[in-house]
Length: 265
Image (cartoon, rainbow, N blue to C red; front, side, top):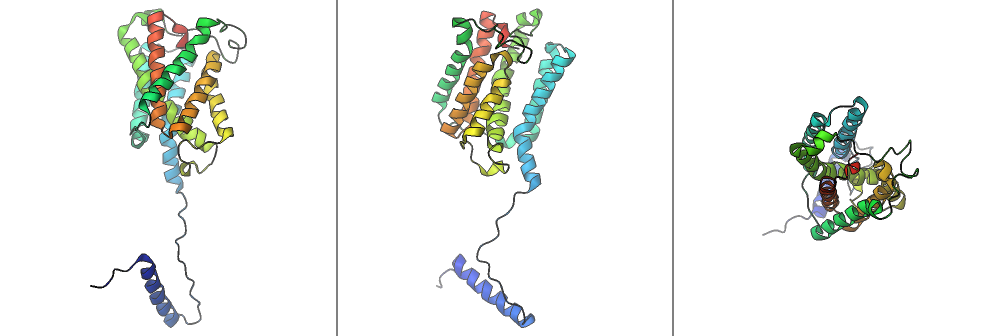
């Protein structure tokens, strides 16, 4: 039995054959040997699709939220409609990303509990929320936007909590930590593993995440730092989604049980 050709031997035979054919047909040309293939450049369409998978659900969510506030739409039907649109966008663009694996699930639950405690502790202990630094023309006012009638609607509250637990963490983590934190480091962001750390991107994402939460920007900043750090620690977007979901679940229960509607802006 003869020995199987190794890739290196095969390349040598291929090179010799090609050289013989080329020399016989074009005697004045000198062959150029290439042992390694040229690296493939990212296909723009592929990169665009990947970007859409991480960003489209968040952009749809934010655009519809802004439209609701601008037009003063009734949350009774506007919120379920927004949720449906975001779910359809996730299904259309992000389905390959929705295979969650948890590196440290128990610890991620603990992280979610810690962030919830950080979120509500300042208002329970220090009562500074209405100072100008937190309520102003830029950040807005810490006041609930949910109509009184919907605060007593079990069906709507169930949908609202389900959306904040099952949809919002997925949408936000895909955008903030799955895409933006890497895109700020490198335009060819796909080549960077999840959880890659560079200080500038880390802190800028935390600040932008804080700005998203209006008068709760300082606890939003703390949450952003913790979630960012958890991604760097676990290298798992699923763990960040789990921690975020636990935070939102506890906050939703607290809002309804204690009547603290101001947390639902």
